Length: 368
Image (tube, rainbow, N blue to C red):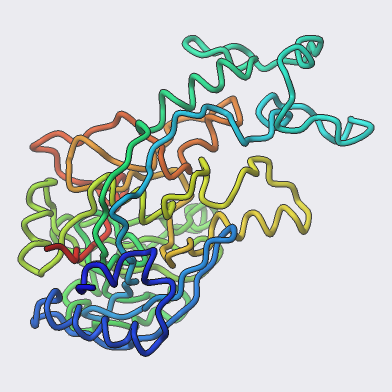
């Protein structure tokens, strides 16, 4: 059995720790460029909805990556419509008003037809029927297919497009922790923007901006419910320029197939965390929310804010979504979080990538 066969998902999950460590040593030697500093290697366990993976979390040049085994026969995409989802959630039934848990995922249209409280019908899809919802799901997810996905070292957290993480700025103390030499040239400009001279009336309404962008210099992003900003360096790249910059460093972007496998592990569920769509303010709802917002079965963190797209190696294919308005129907709100969601958005050839609109995730692919 050669190296590539041993790092297949079906084989990898049955290996002992010592065997995994020996394989990792070979992978780092042959596939990670010597210019990349490797440290903080740790075997960790990840689990989501019954899918378990014991793999490596490690740092490349100070950034967290996880090792994802390959799968030569990964099943990706979706053509099952609303199958497996809870029909009473999709149809916006008020479960609290039901005497018992009557409606399950096997709820039929004949049963539902007597209900009068429907949502307003959309122009293109009938969201008042399971058939219409199924059509919407199938149209906005990628085609069902079997593909070969290589083993990969994938960045745990996606970064705003064109940026590199420098550190954290504390708005209370005005101090910065991180790559101080790269931060210093911009410190005064950043402080002037974050701590402007205000009149008494202006100070009553002023709030810290959600983000700050100075092209080809820096980008700051405020952490909600905190006093901190993430600070990044910034390069004003097009999609092709970003790919070239990553290639010089020894990285690339994920393909659509690789992204879907890395996010959903090839599970035959529309959503990586399961079938729950309605998240209530109770213990069960908190557990579902933790699954959605936490690390997936391979240890990756996936953005759930629906405020930015995530780039792939093909500029005409992006994942996730940037919502521009409030969606009326539950499935419209939740489907962008599906591993197989297809947005139909594309990046133009000469378009500069705004970090407020796009994310990217570095990868090193283990390919023959």
